[in-house]
Every structure is written in C-alpha cells, then in structure tokens.
Image (cartoon, rainbow, N blue to C red):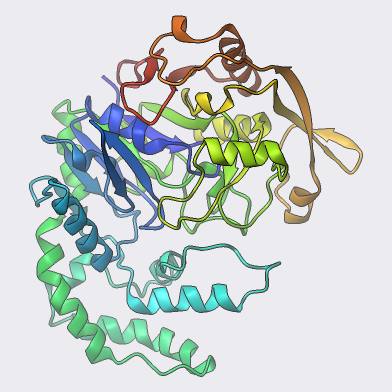
Length: 431
C-alpha cells in the first residue's frame, strides 16, 4: 500500500484536480502541502462543477479527511469564503473533515496590498505575473521570521507583540512608498473576528499524519501549480514563491521523506503557461489559438487566457528527474483530435549548439529554440475513451512516443474532464 504525491510536471493547469479527485476515492487522507489560494482546481463530479483554490480536492468526497499543511500560506478570509461557496453547493465542510496545521502562516491584507503594488509598478519586461493575492509577501514574512501563524490566533494576549514585529517591517516599507501605515489595532481586530471561524480546524498535522500512516491509511499529497514554477527548480524569477517539486510534500506537511512512496506527475498532452516568463514551444498562430479554444484554456482563479504550445519533452523529462516521478497522468489528449500533424519538442538549439535541458540563466531561457519532430495526427475522437481499445492508432502512437521521450511510463490517461473518462494503466496506490 503506497502513499502518493501528485505534482504538476509543467507550469501548472495540467488537470490535477480531476486526477486528485479520482485518486481520492481510494485515499483516506488528502493533504495540500504548498502554495496558497492562487492555485485553482476544477472538479466535475456527477455533472456538478466545483472550483477550488485553497481547499484540498478531497473535500467534495464524504468520508475523506482533508488537510492543509504547514507549507501552505493561508488567507483566513479566503478560507471562510471558499467554505461558504461549497456549502451553497451542498458540500458542508466542518472540522471533522478538514484539519489545518497550527504552524501555517497567514496571508493578511497587508500582503495582498504589497503584492498588487509591486506588480502594478513593474514594467512589462520585469512583471512576474502574480495573482496579486499576497502569496509571495506572505512567504517572505515566513522566511523573515515575522509571520503571523494560525496558532498565534489561539492566544490573543501574545498577538499584539507579534503584530508589532510584523508591522515594524511593513510600515517601514509603506513609509518609503508614501503609503499610510497599517493600524495594529485594526489588524488585531480583524484577526480576532476571524479566529473563531478558523481555529476549530487547527491541529498538530505532523502527528495526525504520522498516526494515519502507522494505522495503514492511504495518504494522497496534493501539490499546487507545477514543478516548472518551483522557486528553486523553475524558470526563475517567473515562478511561484514555494517549492512545488515532490520533495516539498514531506517538509510542507510534516512527514518524513520515507512516507512518500509514489510520485505521479500530471502532464498535459500539449503545453500551456499563465502569466509571464519563457515558453520555448509557445504558438501564437492558428494552432495555438485552436489549442486554447478547444482546451478551454483559461485560469480557474484568474480567468486569464493561457498561452499554448506543442508538448515540450525536454521540460517534462527534466521534471521527471527533479521530482523523481514514477509515472505520469497524461491529460487532455482529446484536445489534439483532428490535427493533420502533431509536433513535439525533443531538444533545444541555443546559440548554435543543441542541448537537452532548459538553461538556468534567464537570458538563455529566452534564446532557446525548440527542435521539433512530427508524427501524423488522428481524425477519430479520443474524447471519453475508457480503454486502450477505444483510442485511435494515431493517438496510441503519440502516447507511446511521449513515454519514450520523457523516460517515464503513462500510469493514467485522461480523455475528458469527467472523472470516469479515465484509462488506468497502473494504480499509484498499488505500485
């Protein structure tokens, strides 16, 4: 019996929500281990559509325990709002179904404001493309040892000193920007109002997960964004502010690395990216527009259109190595239906030489040129296929080609947003 880590193997938006929901039926515990409410998952269950941005995907499944780990930055107001939205859809999530690590740092209004100010002030050439939700500044305060954490709301007598330490930093920044200082009393009052709404969910998650693991429970660790947005291993500085690779599941939830048995990399059959940053296979022609239209490529949280391009085997092969991916879940194969030919990037050309990796230096990342190989497309539909026999020969050839190029087998093949339109090759929980 394996514990499974699910990560995005590209720049996010690979369809993790459906796969995690599909796997959560077998899991006892679903853990979100990094990121904030800047990530989005769309789940389609029995025709009902659920849009989640902070909560683990398991919350829509009765009988599952959902956990938000210490590696997440938590906006308490966003949490309350998301719980309210789910309740209106008939999914009531109480403390018996959701637990949050006591050491989880909080996203505060001052973080959201600073995030927006920075992004608005940046030139188009230097803009990162953040969601302006305060995630980056909140992680900065965590590393700077001045964050307000969930557990701090449990003792209001010590909160003023902690708020003072936080605002000593932020008000200094605000004075330099000509902004009014944040009133400590107002911030404390806001946190006092939120405390009774969020504290019932607080727990010693490290202990809870250890107990579950020793009892033989199946644990599913759910990452946000994609591995190419990792703060260390992504296309820096056009990345998120947390570690999105599989190893972060351990540090972001409080389990040892030995508890991570199988890593599943969610991989789109083509490539997309939201926001700024290098994108070697980006297509701005009719093909790119078709991929975006047919694939409905718009951000769940932001609504921003995603940039689209052919599958980049160089990047996914690199992610397979940095995440230790055992198998991939290939999604949105049906979006490629109807193309006369399908291309895949198999290498890069940089300043006249051929390389098989994405350079770490930003300037080189923008100069790499994709080297494509082409195979014939297929006219038959793959949408809704639930077995290999349902797939056209051209689509099967494409899947096998992808496996060979990235050096990793396909464990799951997804052919539509519906959870049952899934071809299982290897069950990660039984690997």
